[in-house]
Length: 82
Image (cartoon, rainbow, N blue to C red):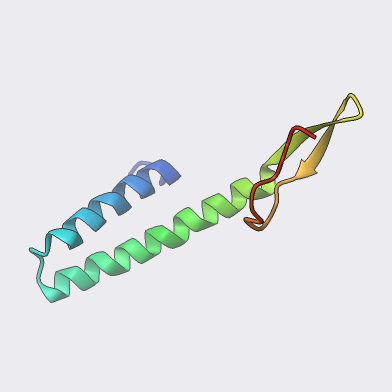
C-alpha cells in the first residue's frame, strides 16, 4: 500500500464528499463514508499543523532578512513589505 500523503488524503476526501452529496448511498454506507472522511480530516489537519510548525516567514527588516514564526491566528491582512 502506498504511503498516505496529504495530497492523497485530500483527493480521497473530495471523492467521499462527492459520493455523499450524490445521495445514492444507504444510511449505513453514508455513515461509513462520513467516518472515513472525518479520519481523513484529522490526518490532513495534523499535516497542516506540522507544516505550520516548520514554516517561517522572511521579512526584510533594516536591510536584513529576519526569520519570523508563522502566525497562529488569521488576524487579518498583514503588510509584509514594511
